[in-house]
Image (cartoon, helix red, strand yellow):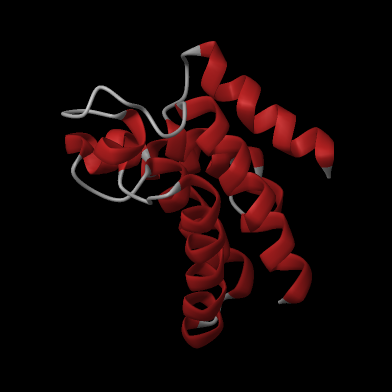
Length: 129
């Protein structure tokens, strides 16, 4: 699924999708929803819930896909916890503000790369579902 990871990255790069939308819309087939619905459902999840204080939008987009793809509350929680732990290990944080380096001037990861990481870890998690 390497192509899907690059597709998610390209969606973010285009400027037409926030981080959550880039991930969620790329995996609309696994989520079982059309892209338009996922696009609308994830409008407010970009920029760390639109404040940069919250969880990275790419991770919230992955969480939406996990929930829809599994249809199981308990399994979804296990999978998104794994995704978030892997993301934190690679990037040092799951918080948008910290990832962007707001306040420190030292970004941990660019948004495009966060989207690719979330997509990669999403794919790994869904293989185990």
